[in-house]
Amino acid sequence: MDLGIQLIDLVLWLLGQPQIKSIRSHFNPSSSAQQSEESALVIIEAAKQVIITVEVAWQLHMEKDIIYTNVFGQKGSALLNPLRLYKDLHGNLVNVTPVHDESDVDLYKSAFVKEIRNFIDVIKGEAKPVTPIEDGVYIMEVIDMLYQSARQGKQVEFAG
Image (cartoon, rainbow, N blue to C red; front, side, top):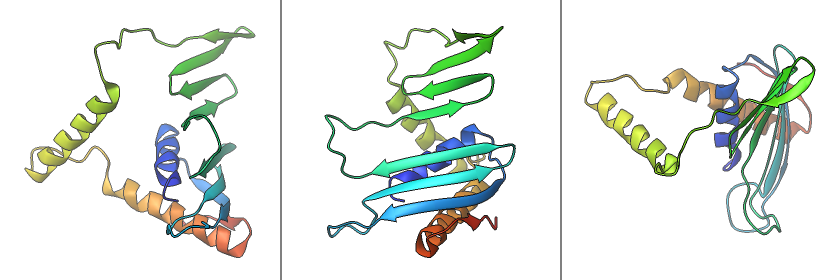
């Protein structure tokens, strides 16, 4: 889960840390000296009929790397990278993506600057962590269950 942990963490955060019911995962072992899986497929079933799928791979024979996150609901969808929001309005799919000029902002760099600033402020006792420790513990429980599912070759009920 060297690649997937960040994606799973992001999706769970976007969905408000939904209660996970079960997990199913398939890992393909690496054929090289690296210590992580070559690829993985994860299916997480959460409360309120939420299904999360994550697919990651170290080596895809593609022109360039791609990272995407798509969220689909009964009344709309959100696609990240780039951000696009769609909503069902009176039976029509409408693009409701906010428009603003980002030409002078490096969002990737800005995110790291904010992360480091929060870390320093927490160490100095001037702020609380943006991400609570409980979120880190939760994602590690999820990862443990993913490995259990892969080892057992079956769906497992989430114990967290």
